[in-house]
Structure formats: C-alpha cells, structure tokens
Image 1 (tube, rainbow, N blue to C red):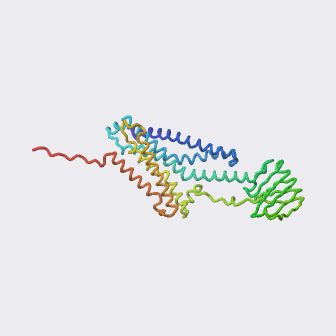
Image 2: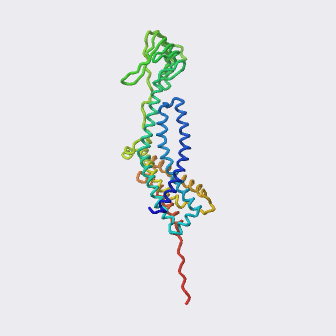
Image 3: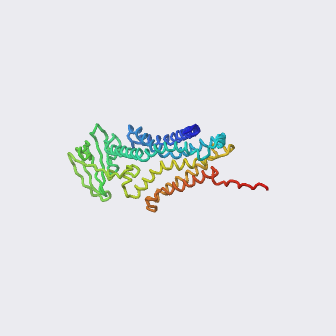
Length: 363
C-alpha cells in the first residue's frame, strides 16, 4: 500500500474508532443499567454482573460494527471532500475507484474479526448468558425462606412463610400448595428443608402441626394432626429448557434442516458480508461539495443503511417462513445493494460520461 493508501487507511480507522467508541458507550451504559436492575431484583446473582456485562458487550460489538464502519468511512471521506483533499487526489489520478484499495483492506480486517464474533464468540456468549440466568432462577427457587416474608420455593405453585429462620430450620411455618382445584395448607411449629442429592428435588419435613386439605368453597376439609409430615416441592416445566436459536453453534446450524436454523445461519453470515457492501456504498455517498459540510451526506447514508438492514430482516423472515429457498436466502439483498453501490461508484467515477466527439478540421 502506497503513501496515499496508508493515509486513507488511517483516516478511515480513526473515524471508525471514534464512532464505535461513542455508540458502544451509549448502548452499554443502558445495558449496564438493565443488568444492575436485574441484580437488584434478585433475577441475577450479583457476582455474575460483570460476566453478563462482558458477554453482552460481545453481542453489541457484533451489532455495531457494520453501522460504525459505514458511518466512519463516510465521515472520513466527507472530511477529505470538505477540505479539498479529494480534489487534489483526483488531480493526481486517484479517483473514487482507487479509494477502494485502502478502504477494502480496512474492511477485510474488520470482516475477519466480525466473522469470528458472529459465528463463534457471540453464540457462545448467548449460551453462557442463558446458563447464568437459568442457574440464578434455579437458585432463587431452591433458596430457603426469609424470616417474616412470603416466598415461593417452586416458582409460584406454593407459598411458604416462616416467622423465624435459622439455617435450614424453620419455626412457626405456614405452607400452602395447590394442585388443580385442591388446596393443602400446613401449619407447623417447626420444619426443615431437605434436598435429594441425586435428583436435586427439595422437600420440607414439618413437625408438630396440622394439615388442611380440600377444595375452597365446598366447606369440606380434611384436617390431620401430625408429628412429622413430608411435603415434596415439585418444580414445574421450567427444567425443560429449549435452546434458543441464537445460542446454537454455527456447526449445528450448518447441519440442521430447520427453517429457523437456516435463517439464523444466513443472518450470521450477513454480518461480515455486509461490511464489504457498506464500504462500497460509503465511497460514493461520501461525495459532497466543500460548502455542504462534513455531515451533509450523513442523513442520506443513514437512510440507505436502514433500507439495507430492513431488507436483511425481511430476507431472514422469508427464509424462516419458507417463502424463499435456502439457496437464495439473504444473498439477494447483498447482491441488489452491491449492484446499487457499483452503479453509484461508476457514476461518481465518470464511467457513464461520454467523451466529446472529435471535430473535423476545416479544409
């Protein structure tokens, strides 16, 4: 790469880095507030806040890289146009087509990193986040009661209250469980929680109490005095966790025939591919007059980017519904937008301008 190419490369890299830093800070600040809110509400373990934040940052890096590259290259070249440097480069024979060499080299480096993010790191991060959330949910369900508070050890099917809690020992206990229309109420002087080491199922053993069993509204309840009573606490269907398609490994998506999996595979491949399409569009869209200013074409660039990303989302939806075959996928979107970029670049380079016809000299 010659001196001019390295100069264009540095300008594009600096502009991209600035845009990425600003957008990443904005999005991650909002995300941190949400994570801290979940931790404060005991939906996440507090020790997992930093891990969740770091894993979420990988996903936002993947999502923000295309738009930051597009805006970064557009702003960098727009500055060169505003300061008259592009006119000087054109006078030296460096046209819009020659700019694709340093811009393409920069895009290739980003695309390699983004491919690793979208195909490997981000799905692994999504799986880890789901594992942390599932473990937190199970821990909250298995947690022992808090003194003086009503809690649900099984996600809502039972309600437990204890006046005093010492370790796993409960004193002055109230437990209500409901199965269909039948309600069971236990009032006991003491109780303790036991967990099966093999199945991780939890039960409560109550001592010196009464069991009330019946259907509310019928007026007929069975009342049993007991010295010791075992009450199992069964969790619902939350143990049957269905793996989210975003968390599946790319190798599993490639071997899958499900439409949702194929659509997710096309979606992931679109991220690194979109960098080249957007870089191609950024070169002609950055062309502006000195009076137009550095941000003169920014609105048009954002409008084009929104159309492009919406077309990708539509293409993914069509693959999921089977409207478009897997061989077509989302490739048609990239092809159409790339053709538009080539036509715009050709127009800026003057490829469509006819050379003036030579006039015959007078006899």
